[in-house]
Image 1 (cartoon, rainbow, N blue to C red):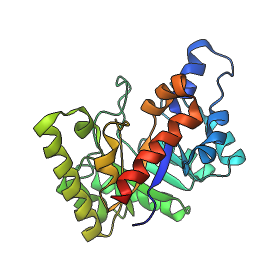
Image 2 (cartoon, rainbow, N blue to C red):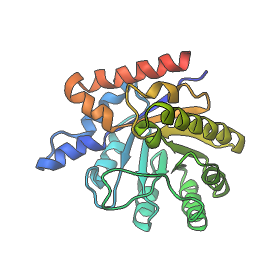
Image 3 (tube, rainbow, N blue to C red):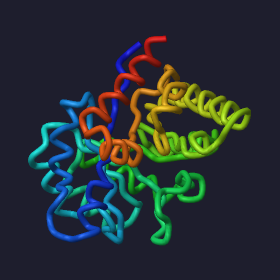
Image 4 (cartoon, helix red, strand yellow):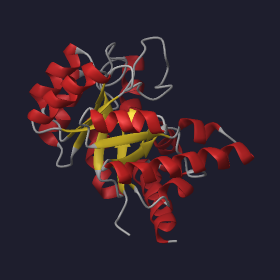
Length: 243
C-alpha cells in the first residue's frame, strides 16, 4: 500500500501570533519543520476575515518553503484571484461562515454545482490541483465528479466527535465514501478533528491517500515540541497503514 501523505495545517501558529500582534511565533518557522517531522505538505486556510493566516503568510510559504502548498479557501471572487496569482500546488475549496470557529460541515456541491464548475475549471486552467471538502455523502461525491474536481477531502469531524457505536457507524460511512471516490475517479483525502486516538481507522482506509491535520498537532506541540508531535502522528499513520 502506498505511503499516506500527511499535510500539516499551521493556521493556529498564526492564531497565537495574532493574539498578541507582532511576528512571533512565525508560521513560516513551523512550515520549515514539516519535512523534518515526517510531513509532506503545508496546509493553510486563508479565511475571508484573515483571523489567522494572512496573505503575506501565503506568499512567504509559497516562495520560501520547498514543500507543496495546499491552500484552503472559500469559493469567492477574492479567493479565486489570490489562488490564480499565488498558484499553490493544491487548493481545497471549503464552506465558510464568518461566525464559525472552525469549518463545521462539508461543502454543498449539489446546490452550488454550476458556480463550482466554473471555479474549479478556472483553478485547474492555472495548473492548480483542486479538492472539494465534502461530507461523506454519495450525492456530494457524485456532484464533485460532475464539476470536474480531481480530488475530494472527506470531512471526518462527525466521526471524530462520535463515540462507541455511533463512531463505528461514521467510520463505515467514511469507508463507503472512500470506495465510491475510487469508483468515480476521485482522489480521496480526509481531515478534520483527527487525533492520535482516532486517526488509525481512517489512515487504514486503502482509498485514502492524504490526511490533513492541524489544530490537534499545534496543541500537542506546546507540550511535546512541533517535530515530536508531528512525528508521532506520522508513526501512528504508518502503523495503521501497515496493518
